[in-house]
Length: 308
Image 1 (cartoon, rainbow, N blue to C red):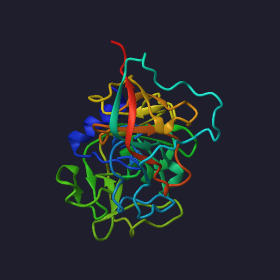
Image 2: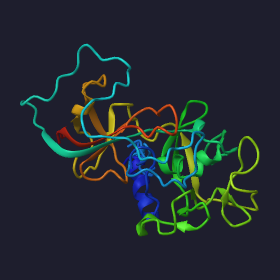
Image 3: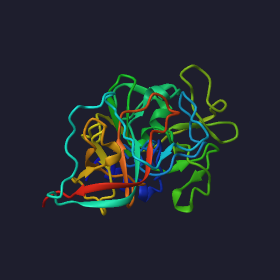
Image 4: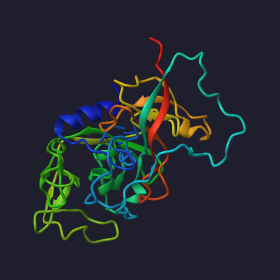
């Protein structure tokens, strides 16, 4: 089972699933899907489901209040910046696949530490220090599953530890009751309580995010690790619902026909919010946190299941 899949299962059991980015992840890569990794997306872009509520910690560039862009037609992305002169062929009748209709296509990416503003702190399992909000907030790798550090290297969450999620006011909240306690903001540890009992954390530039910290709350059992959680390929790997698209399947997406790879992807990841006819494309992070990535609705995709 992949790290993203294990994270998804653990987060579901603990009541932690929601996605960040443009997808409703992760994630892919969906942890982080909190899923997963596929990723994860609103992942998000994270691999997993709807974008996080506006009360989640805001990275360096504030996220807009508008919803992620949605496209109902084709038009593909060209991550290489140029349109290749020769594309891999589209599916032929000789291939033993099937078309899936009414498919939602989203995107997810590893969370860039550079988008965050918290103070550098020791991270369990890692030798260096990292921004605290990147580690523990609902927009960081505790939710996304993995991210890109300030040193340009990949890191992922290795063990979730105990506890679920808290609101900005420091109240427990869970997706199982529709986040009745409020929008998720931070893990149940790895922060300070302010005068009102809410969540606050030190900023790298000095001061605090929401008033001075009165008492530190640890997060037992959490750990991080260097490297990616899965060997995913940018613009080539996707997160899927394995009950609909088995892992290892080759998937042709006409909306990405001119993306440099002819629209072909490999199903390699999963995400807590990737259900049914929904795939999440693993991509490089956009230029800023205010870019939610691109979404396509009502799409047709072609799936070739792996041979047993």
